[in-house]
Amino acid sequence: MITMDMNSLGWRPLFTSWLNLLPKILTDNHKNYLIELFERFIDPCISYLRKIDLNELSSTCNSNLVRSLMNILDCQFDLFNDLKSTEDIFPLIEAMFFFALVWSIGITCDSNSRIKFDFFLRK
Image 1 (cartoon, rainbow, N blue to C red):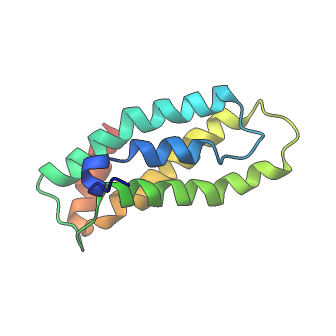
Image 2: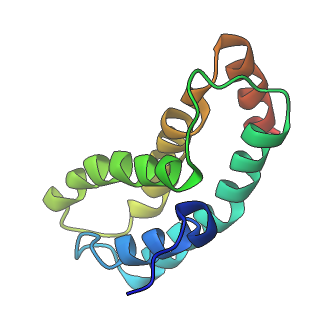
């Protein structure tokens, strides 16, 4: 057995295993869209949180932030269990992702830092 520090391992292995547990209604195209969203936004948002003058209320680990995002998405994806069609899922996935991003990564800051994070994310 080999043990590694969570920061050395990163968030991608957690994300990859999480993709395999998504509801069956999510097709490979939906999963690829989720991969695009995670790859496009997670690293820049975490880097902004860490390197810019933002004040976290308590210290966090990058992989735990992403795990929190995935937990929020899991709760929201329960809505898909009642869907019969998959054609309207893409806009829902995008909206759910940004909701989860704000409430997992952006929420860890104090009030002034949340305003900065909001501006960064909208930009």
